[in-house]
Structure formats: C-alpha cells, structure tokens
Image (cartoon, rainbow, N blue to C red; front, side, top):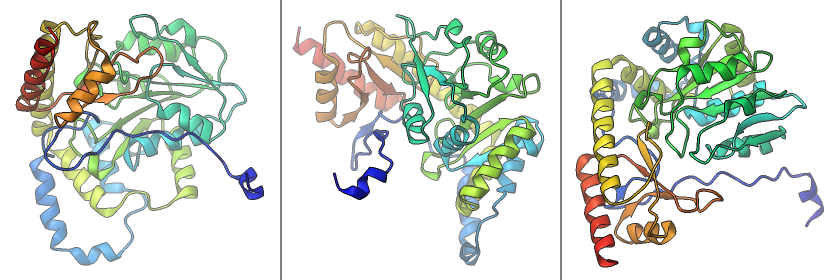
Amino acid sequence: MKAFEQNIRKVEPYVPGEQPQGQVIKLNTNENPYPPAPGVLEAMQNLEAHMDTLRLYPDPTSDCLVEALADYYGVEKERVFVGVGSDDVLSMCFLTFFNSDKPIFFPDITYSFYKVWAELYRIPYECKAVDKDFRMIKEDYYGENGGVIFPNPNAPTSLYEDLEFVEDIIRHNQDVIVIVDEAYIDFAGHSALELIDKYDNLIVTQTFSKARSMAGMRIGYAIGSPLLIKYLNDAKYSFNSYTMNKTSLVYGTAAVKDRGYFDETIHKIVETREWAAEEFAKLGFVFPKPSGNFIFVSHPDYDARELFEALKAEGIYVRYWGSRRIEQYMRVTVGTRAEMETLFDFLRKYIADRG
C-alpha cells in the first residue's frame, strides 16, 4: 500500500443490476415496463422550444417539483425534500440524521445500499435478522439505537408490513429518526405518510423510478416534519446547491400531475404480478407474498445460479445475489404480460428438459 492510500476512505461499493444493451427481456432492476405519463412527452417538447434556458442553473429549491408533490400528497411544501433519485435522498438522510455513537438498526436481508452508506459515513450499525419467512421482527427494533431504517415493502423479498406494524416500530423509537423507505409502496398498501402528522421523527422516502416509470431521470423525495426537511436542505445546500437538473424538474412535475395514467399503470403491473405469481406456483416455485413490482422466487429442485445463467443465455435478465440465506433465490421484476409469457415459456421448457 502506498503511503497516501492510508488516508483514503475505502468502502465496498453497492453493485447495481446489469444494464444490458440490445434486444433482451430486462427483469433485473425493477424498472417500470411502461413509458412515463403522456404529459412528460409534452413537457419535453415544450422544453425543446426553450433550449436556451439550459445554459442557466436550475432552481436550487426545486420549487415546481416540490409544489407538485406537496399538492399531490396534500401537505405543505415545507414538508417535501427532493433529490437525484431516492438513493441520493437516502444518502443525505444517513449523512444528516445518523450521527450518534449508537448503532443504527436495519434488517439483515434488505436493500444492500444501507450497509454501504453506513460504512461510507462511518456510522455504526446492526443488522437485525429477519425470521425464516423473511419477516422483520419488530421487537428487535425496541433496543437503544442511533436510528432505524427499513423498506416497506422490503427488497428483495417484496414483503409488505401493515401500518400497525410500522407504527409500532416508530412508537418505540421516538428519540431517534426513523426512515421508512417506500420505493415500492404504490404496489402494496397504506403508506407511512399517514403517520407523519403524528410523529415528528418520521421520514418517508419514495421514488419516481418504479411506479412513475422515470428511473432514467433520477428523481426521489422525502416527506417529513418541516424541521427535518430544513435539516436535510441545510445539508444539501452545503453539499451541492444544484442537485436537481432542469429537465428532471420539468418532466417530474408533469409526471406527478397525471394521476389517471399513474393509477392505470399501477393496476396493470399489479394485475400482471398476481397472474405471474400463479404461474410461478404452478411450476413449483416458492416465494414470499409479493407486494412490490417484483417476485422473489426459489425452486426446490433447481439451483438458482444455474437457472439465472440459463435465463441470461436466453436474453432474459433477472437479479441473483448468491448471498447468505438467499443463495437459492432470484428476484424477478414484473414486466409486460408478453415479457412474462416469454419468461414462463422458457421456464416450462427448462423444467421439462430436466424431467
């Protein structure tokens, strides 16, 4: 090791899903299979007519998008924070809120970026083991800690916990910040946003990457008390005043305003998910009850890594980790009905050939 390397911060980075090019069926990164709302195209055309505005810095307050989100959720603008995808928002939350000497708590099977951020910012942490059914054990989060974060629905398991369960964890942790990461909530049930008036230590994060079909624009947001949002903005402006580019602000605002298209897309994905779950079950796959836009599957008779590689060879991409406790599971994003039918055609052949 060179002398200067001793003072370099070293972390084991998060490994994102593959982004294959060409004609493939991409079911590995939980993107929405449908295009963004029609209003986004109109916003793009309007922006093209005013290209000269791109020479100027974007609004550092992201006011148009903040206002659209505040209106959509029926909250004050002072309760909304936006960032470059929910990863940026969550990273800023870690930096801002988790500064205790006590460990933060999150599940052992969950979004693997949590551990990366904790190590990057040198935040002590404890991973609380989920049970044999991949469920969180709420009592494990009652102990003294420096903060709590968990996704609902969880990833990669797709399990959703009801609002009573979520509130129980918040109620037992009112002296620290509790973050509920709701990247997939639109495919599930009630949101913890229903609790933000009751608990001033609660932050709820969501994203445009899943339900709003805008993963490529990188838009995420947090909603909480005005005090917590002020702290987030203070940290943001100390880090980068212009985090949101102008195109993301314009297109994101247009997407929020089209409620009808949003509801229609969610309905199609949930409908396809429920059909796909039945098809997986017919083929002998096992999986937790899915509540996101993906299904976490395993087959008792076939090795997950081998099946993953066989799918990939056919141009069908799903997500496989091979991590402890989930080495026999794959996460399959819900695509269009046609994409899922192609997947099941391959799986039926794969199983038949191995008789």
